[in-house]
Image 1 (cartoon, helix red, strand yellow):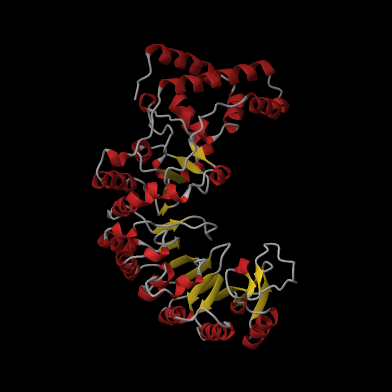
Image 2 (cartoon, one colour):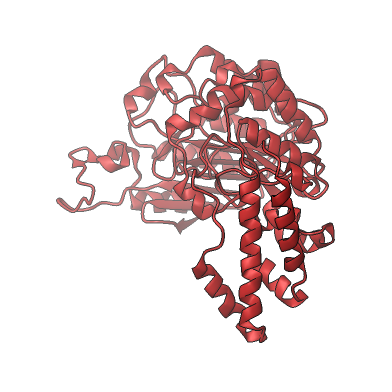
Length: 497
């Protein structure tokens, strides 16, 4: 990393003096209009007496930090974790693959400057000083950009997994407010991007790259990684991240594996079988909240013994869990469910091996655009085993089945399940969303997927759906309320809190 030249330092100091001599009213308005990425730069430019003002503007963005397993990103993350300015405010760290934008870091455009002038015009501040102050700010940004440049590199080419894991562990342990770690496919919420940003406390060690310093939800939609990109992190990184969380000094109580909740796209933990079994158990014992919105490999047919063993070890050790959220999706080829070599889903691992004596809240959700199938017998057994502590149960976008049965009417299965739930008097809240079939006439299928056995857009035979009349009768028989959701959902609600 090249150090700034003497002439660059002199120019920066001159411009800084001009900038901080602005009237307080104008300086306040300037900073309020800046994006978090620009405020981060100003933190290094302005005297430390301005830190309190900048902190008040940055505080919400500092709660979340996104980290890639690259040398640049991990180094900036280390800076964050040792900085008195940042470390106390970070509550969640999310590890993502290389899914960030490659566009250059942009200085404010002329159009934004014009909007800025309009915004403060009512304060009767002269246009000349506004324009001059904006030019000073622009010069500061350009001078800093030209001083320091760094480029990301895959740190696995240079350091062993153990070294990377140790660095992450040390950094995580230095965040006093940290409670949650996530492994996701892409940026999904506002936060700080450690891949290219200035998080060092001194100008000489500041770092800037070619990409944005912060990320917004709007950017996230455009920057979602492809399935191939997921593996940049997940094939090598899952084991490293889990090991880093094992350190007793790392205060993690919540773990999220997967994307948005509920998931609107598949997320796969590829090569999960390479994660150390003992590490998984150590992390599981720490957790009070767990969200799993993913599958354990991108080829369902190749789910192996090692992956199953890791999940079983993980859920059997999660004895301190209070909240469990699980996502489940249905394979498009129904024949795969009948394949004896298929292996259980993540949800079935949790139901079959989880013994959580503190569990109070359970939520199971299907993917937004697909049905979720879950073994009714397995779920009923799980609810029975945890009835002493469970207080709320929420199920949505799922259908019940029984082992080895993927066809036929599900009305009886749902009736049996709801009767089981009704007997669990400890529940203060229970809700379930189930699919119903919405008939349409011949030639009216918008997707053009109708056949004699039903509409193919549902991915299931029509007999797996419940007619509206059946749904209403079932609710009436059970004495529960039936509320409408979207056009293809119905919702049972029992025991409102």
